[in-house]
Length: 368
Image (cartoon, rainbow, N blue to C red; front, top):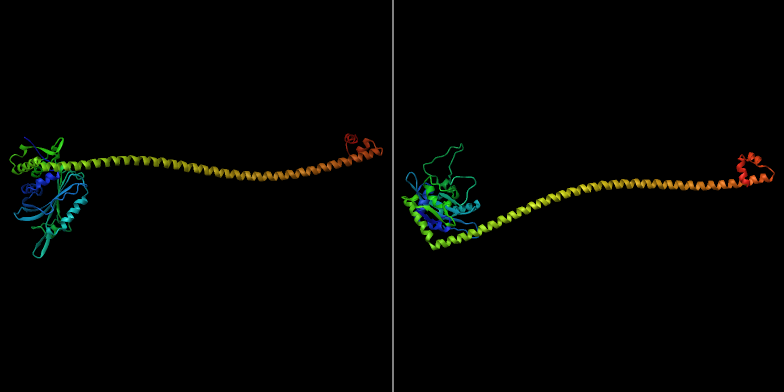
């Protein structure tokens, strides 16, 4: 027969479940692998962070456990449950608070020591790549050479300063029932959550038949499923986590947009970098052209100076030619006067040409 029990991953259902002292002993005994003789909730046991933050549900227990030798001792159990991934700092801060609480100090004659502590983490997410549903982290004592120190009785000083931890990865339960603890935790297996209604878990009643403690847990969870106050609180949690999911989706979309914008900015930066390189190349080319222009200007300036000097020389040569032309004109006038004078004295052309050393044709032109 299939039973639809309340999903204990919800804070309100988990609180409802652990309020029952018999169930608390059953679950803690399975976790500790020791018989829990008595258990009581400590003051301020329900610390549910405000709804605008990550949900982290906590319960403090004072548990009397029976050791293998039959002796009983009191330990402190700090049980923390969370749906979502959260930073380890939150867990450390809470443990630090428990270390400082005076009510966790035991006075024995002349010695004072803190209660031994076990931290239990029920996580709705995986821890890295660890693929074991339940992880035990136990401290041990060693000497310098690495040899483990074994004592008949736990040392109060050591136990006051260190604590053991139990980490439950709920997503890895997946119907595994290989031992007592996995059977107890099977009611947390989210792979059995009802389709369309995560507030309930589907379990087979016959799987727990004959197990009085598990039958009692199922009865309690059935009661929670039919309790209107519990259902209302579950609805509130759904709304809260829906808001977180919507927020995370919006953040994810925003991050994707920002990532695309960043890629575009990178592409633009690359384009600008290329353009800057081209501009640098162009500037180099312009600089070279400017240098060439300066060289050409210098050459033109020199050529101008040379042309100016040549002009001055031509001007001087022109003046000299003018002076020569004047002298030639004067010479022609004097020659003409001499020729005419000799002719007037009765000399013929041939005689005049011989005397002056000029061609007869030239003498004849002067006389015409």
